[in-house]
Image (spheres, rainbow, N blue to C red):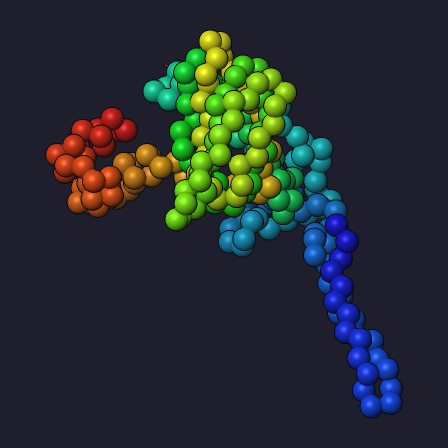
Length: 218
Ligand SMILES: *[C@@H]1O[C@H](CO)[C@@H](O)[C@H](O)[C@H]1NC(C)=O
């Protein structure tokens, strides 16, 4: 990406002047491989000595393998974030493979730090995202092999396998560490737990049902 340049052109009494401010808007190093042993806390990770960088810092293997979706949701995400590839540090980029059993659901969740672009490799997925208040518009599509869909940053979204066979999708995300907050686990498995009053009022249902719902997520 080009550097940012802001120019001011002015006329000051009889003289004409042009003043420019220039700054890098992107990385100023070839790479900044995460130093996973550092005890320094910064936004991202400190770079390890570039002289010690090697090809494996930019490499991951295993995304051809099916994730184990033997769980109540029938889906499994296999992330390839900066934790898996330290060379992704500062690059604003990552990817994920998601596997689905028939009827499998990747339940409503958000990535607070990334938009996501997903393509279906096998199967048929019903996908969608929900815009913010007050309209909460719902944008949904049925995707087949080769179809691509975008989930804008921070918005709630989901994917569900509506085909008869397993499905698999690959997505790219514009953060080295997109973060995931899945609605149900966030509300029912937080540590410490949310007060039953809060859950019951949020969903407008009787407090005695909160324990039943919570027990299903533990
Ligand atoms: C898949 O996950 C289930 C549930 O956690 C587990 O019982 C099973 O052994 C796992 N299968 C493989 C192949 O790892």
